[in-house]
Image (cartoon, rainbow, N blue to C red; front, top):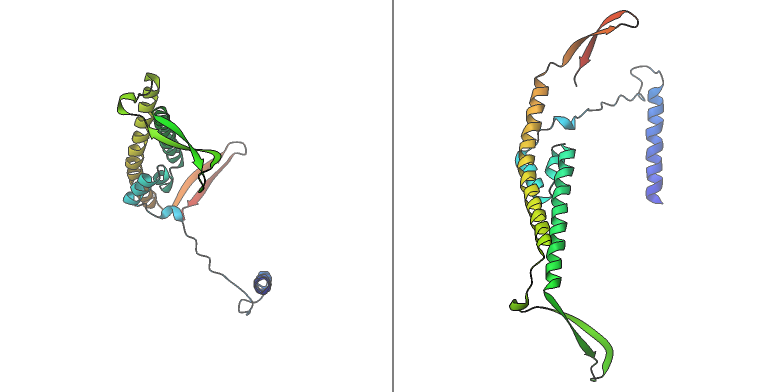
Length: 199
């Protein structure tokens, strides 16, 4: 309650000063507020290629998103995680195929059977181990290759993407701040000069 009242009072004071500031008062009036709002362009910050590669190596696709290449990041991330999940699924199928389930009766401290069974998993002997069928081996190979390929591509592309971003940034900075364009409106028969200012 105490903090709510403080927040309410602060909001009312800011509103009152803002309302007074919007009124046409003298320039030297004490209630006239002229906030100096700084415009900061986040697109003007250069990207670090090593940081981008680190992000891509840690979380595939995040390096491209850091470079503002969102479509590349989504495609890289989806490719990597799809390959990862399919690979894990195939490995789990192989483990389930070569694992025996053993059920053991459960007894209490007095040696009486509780009517429950406990499950234990034991790997089969080496002579009884079976491999995956051929079609599943192909799927496993494709998914593992896609996973590793997307990871390697993501790291390299993120590193190069940061350099592409910085080169584009330098090219934009070398352009003149004000560009002029000749505009023609055939419908009204007007010709004009348009000035475009880059902030």
